[in-house]
Every structure is written in structure tokens, then in C-alpha cells.
Length: 330
Ligand SMILES: [Fe+2]
Ligand SMILES: [Fe+2]
Image 1 (cartoon, helix red, strand yellow):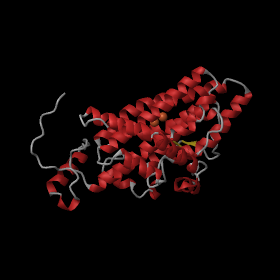
Image 2 (cartoon, rainbow, N blue to C red):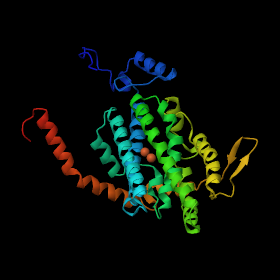
Image 3 (cartoon, helix red, strand yellow):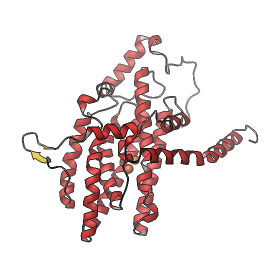
Image 4 (cartoon, rainbow, N blue to C red):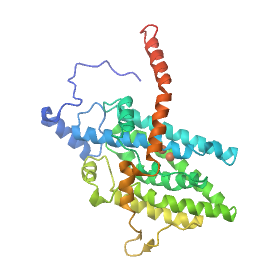
């Protein structure tokens, strides 16, 4: 479809807040109130734009860094079938990073800037990817618990107020559900295997359970930006609501699998209609997000090296694009 030639309309994009005529703010508020989408060319408050850049970039970085713990096992997959599954999964994560960086670029930041913010430590990625993968069972556990938690977090984001982000999430969520199922199927296969394999699964679940609960972020009363993100329709549910939903969904799956979730406080609460569970170790969470998790330095060093090793590809692509655009030989 071709769009009509641009008309001489005033550029409403990224006008500073103080210069924004009230009608722009009113139009924005009305769009949010009727749960409609804000699109890249629409006027938006600067705080909304900044919040989105931070959240989408953090999400994109998580997809890309998240390839490392599992990529670690591609060369040691136990069979050709497992290797093909894992390769496809890790490639999907690269694609998720790509959709999200593209969504973020519609807010006026370049991918090069975002990469620089990640490598310099000024933007973050999910705490979960700072834990090591110590056995092949971790591939299954990551699919089941980590992709499972990601799905609970991300399904409501399909209805987020910013159009390009919501549309990227729709496609991502479809692929995440494949990731979750491949993980569960791997664990189920191992649980039907030898005693040693069952122990390997249990040991892996013991390590990943608490970090998975931390993926939903700090408790609501310690999450100062949440209320504003919810008012803007960026977030649709609170951290604690989503964490509860994940626990409720996962306990029956653990039972079916035959593994024990490592929380003595986990029990069904008839009155609430939900599972009660113990508090994750928030000091550990704080240490991991501030850079002191088991693998933070390794993950960033690997990302930096990959970025540097890929410089020639970016240069070649740019030279080709310039030449194709009639810019002469590069
Ligand atoms: Fe993903
Ligand atoms: Fe995934």
C-alpha cells in the first residue's frame, strides 16, 4: 500500500511538554482513556516517550543477552533433534530483539545508541540472564519457567498503549508459547528417564524457581514507577498480580511433571483462591540488577565482543545501502 504524499501539516512529534498546546495533551489522554493505541507520529508527553524507550530497550536487550545462557548448550545438545529445537529457539530470541529494537527506534532513538547504553551499563536487561546454565536440564527449565514467566508478563503487553510495542508483542508471544512447551516437553522426557535425569531436573528447578519469580520485578509497594506506567496504559497489571498468576499456573504443571518447587511456604489458600508462597530474596535481586550477579560481567563482555566482531558486517551493510541508494561507490 502506498501512502499519500505528505501534506504540509505541522510536525507534532516530540514537541517539548511546555510548548504542547492543551489540545494535544487532551487528545493523548482521550486515546489512553478509550484504550486505543498511540502511534509514532502522535504527540505524546516526554515522560511517556522516555518510559517506553527505557522499557522497550530493556526488553530488547533481555532477548539478545538471553541467547547466551542457552546458546552455551547448542554445541553439546544430546541429540540432533534437541540441537535443532534449541537452535530454532535461540534464533527466535534474536528475532524478538530485532522487533523490539525496531519498535524502540520509532521513538526517535537509534539501535546504535541503544547498544551503547547497554554496553556502558546505563540500560539494563532482565536479572534472570545473569544466572549460569549448568546442565542440559537448564534448557528445559528455562523454557518452562523463564519463557513461562515471560509469557505471563508479555501477554498483557499485547494490549499496551503504544502501537509498535503492542504489535511486536503479539508475534513474540506466539513464539514464546512454543519456547515454553519445548522446555516442558524436554523436562517431561527427562522425568521419564533415569533416576540421574530426574535428579538433574529437580536440581535445575531448585536453582531457577526463585530467579523466575524475581522476573516480575520488585513488590508493588517498592515499584515506584508502576502506577504511572499503568495510568499511561503501558503496563496493564501490577508486578504482584502477575507473579501470583505465574505461581498459580505453574504449581499444577510442577505436579504433573513430578518435581517439587523449592518453597516450604507454597500451599493452596482456599479463601483467596490462590497459592500462597514465600517472599523471594530481594537482597539477591538487588545485587543481581546492580551488576553483582553470578554472570553479569561475563554476559556483558560476551555482548561487547560480539558487537565488535560484527563491526565489519554493519560497515558492509551501510556501504551497500549507500551504493543502492545511488550514493556512488563506497
Ligand atoms: Fe523472546
Ligand atoms: Fe523465549
